[in-house]
Length: 380
Image (cartoon, rainbow, N blue to C red; front, side):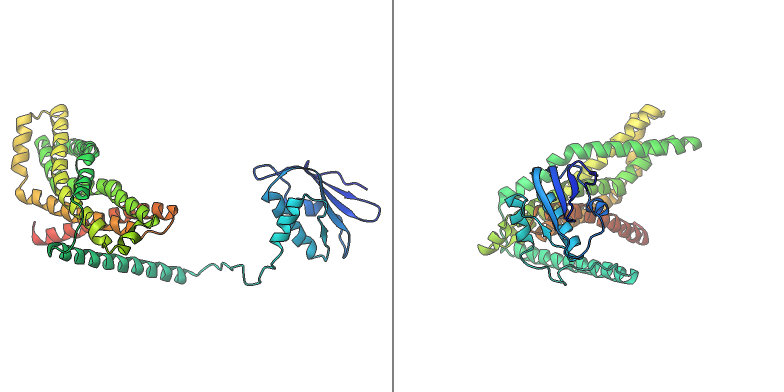
């Protein structure tokens, strides 16, 4: 008696002696539509102990681990019914792989049980992870401070060529994206302000809005966010790749402090360039507001210039510059820390780069909120 095949690449044959034979045909490779073990089992008759069961591959085409996995699962299913599967007619390669896979029995405790943790356990785990990250950040800041002390005592060394190359990457090469974002930010601030101020006939105060907004908040913040995504990520990727290639270990072996040689010049470069880029961003943002004021409103260039000059003070400029300096320090420290503490594979480099960007942006926003509260309480 022969049962009709349910799939084109296998067929069940049952002879008069109640011997069941599973005939495989076609290609059994990953990517092709292959029969599921459940479908094969459902097509089997009622099995009893010591019933002969064999599997043949005379018409078998290409095969890979997909076939081996199927046979192992079928063997496990039949073993529960005390039925031994005969694979002597399969290709030699398949038999060898199955013998290797079953040479050592699986330990009962080898498979980990993944129990769903409770909400309290999840909260506790997240809290411990947060404390661990804060501890790593504090430790790295301490190492950075010690590196600063060694530098000012003339004991820390790094190559001047590397420092000026990093300065170029942080500064001049960042000008195009800073120009674009700052110009658009000035346009947006002016456009939003113009719509509301026009209702009260106070069009001229759009210059105050753009000038104060860019100099105190938006110039420093947008520059910091851009540099976090551009330079902070580059620091993490560069140092993370060096960690994977064991170059940092080589520095330690040669007695060269990685904090002094790799981290310190990057921190100095970003601290140096962030105030300059922020000043540039402020000017470009004010020019963006000028385009809206002269193009959409009846405000001349001279009126806009005089109103801007009257509204903005040295305190406004210095506030933005001070913030940008702190942002530059934080971006450099977080980027370098993510790279130095990176794992030893390519995936870890990607994770470190992502963490550097996300952490930098979050800490920039939090720091800006703290500065806002401090300056408000001090009347600045």
